[in-house]
Image (cartoon, rainbow, N blue to C red; front, side, top):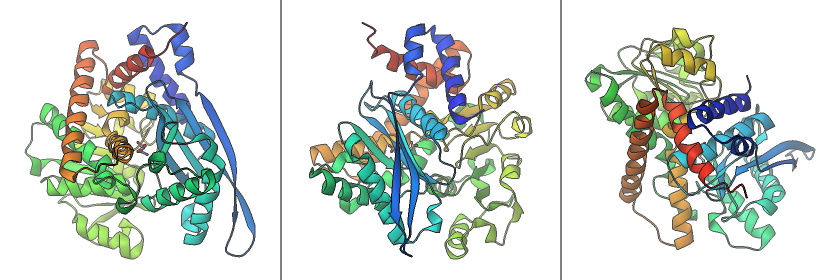
Length: 409
Ligand code: GLU
């Protein structure tokens, strides 16, 4: 099933538990607006290439559309729709006043020069400028997009609209209106949630707890750091080229240096090489998918050894796998809760820009911790109340909050 089909299945599961009004269901399951744009770029060799760009505004019932931009070869409309829908759910799970949106360009930015990347970003910004804005739709980073890319968006948006609107995107560099802590927020939020879940589910000391992480981007690599600093054992990590495994624990500092110097974690010498698929099935206590969608399906769910799965990626587990994992007694902490730290600190950044008052990092993380742990408590009790998995529980909470804002008159 495609990511959007998965997303709608998840919505249906929650709608059943909620006894959601059929009219509300029909309205909630479709995006408000789907925008497809062409993104022409003059390449360094003088030729023009025209890329496909998207922005999906799923719903703004709870606040401005909010969600990242992904520059990735497999981006397509179905994926962006799913990601936009998950943003609406995510913001409602952590109860921040934002709706759901997402965007992207079908491209491999690794093949572009820096000048081409900047031109691509500016061209895309011109195309979506009429439909974004701090009170309308607020993009942010996602896979392969960075704070610097966000600063180009602000600059180009200001240039074409003539409006100074710093809060038009979040995830900006610190000296360009960014928030302290935004760069580590996704992993940090996941870490706060994970520590609570560990207390509820695993009867082991920290140093005995083995963890595997699929993906070594902003979310996965920062998570690896936090876990090692917290006294846990990270035994496997991977990136797009493959993974490495050492059951005695990886030296994450060395892994990071290796990736910086040689382009991939697989060049790290004190570990055994494994594939991304093998990583999911390693004998660990906790598995953290932090890469792409549809990694855990009915094909491999029964091979997963971990008791706890924490989804830092969006959409890594499909509904068929969810069912198998729940029946096997596994605890899947869903993306819409586990990785919501990123958008939560984006919301803090947006507030800081609008108030023109900037917070200390300690305040950002204290507020983030409070939101993440109270959201986990709410989702956990919902799951117990109905004897359902945590994803369905998170959707039940979120969909009821969104549906409450729908006026059918
Ligand atoms: N791309 C991130 C996500 O999937 C962050 C979105 C944001 O900060 O708006 O949640």
